[in-house]
Length: 320
Image (cartoon, rainbow, N blue to C red):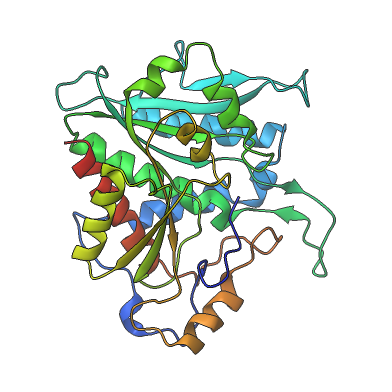
């Protein structure tokens, strides 16, 4: 789910975009090659749009669980990173969230946790558009978000903090947050929720250029995670505006149970872009909930690099 806040959500770039918007080549920064590869895999036609209550969404869940297992993530519930659940709307269909925790630098998963999440589902297959395309691939919503979360997880696995990192990929977010609701309502979820000091949601697209302003949904009432995110943003020359939690992402349900949350939303101004260039970028790449929200070889990754690097900085500092 991505929100249509006027003047806030702008995605992509155009051929006339400033040349300085190419992704930085910093070996210690985000791996945009890996991010692009994962996003392409998760939004491929073969995934059939990761539709609700489908084998395709289950395949996406298994793919993500495999990625986390290779990083050393451990189960939080039971013995698997795949967490099954059933909802009243489809009582015969078992679906899966993905939940795993990466150990802290002491090698344990006990104690306080920092969390990061993105949703794995999208809209699946529907009536064809004018071009004959019937698959809602969900590239920006939310294959790129999942890819950035995995990039943060990779960096954490290499350089863990004093607190562990719990990574969650929720199913049925597009169906009124049913996957995250199923998790927070588990009888055994309280132990996890009480240990979480911050949960970051990644599902607001990825701007083509370096966004200079951000909304921190969930930053009010103010909490240490919001102050940290703002401080790290200002160190990069950005500004932030905090707002109260709203039911626009899975993290909202955690906030209702006392977990501090952040849901970063890129704003109107991008470094090196004129208003006209930014508008052209939106028209070229921002295809929210359309069949055309799919992988493109010309999608620029500069904004993703800066977004993912900021996410990592927040997690790194918050985890101690």
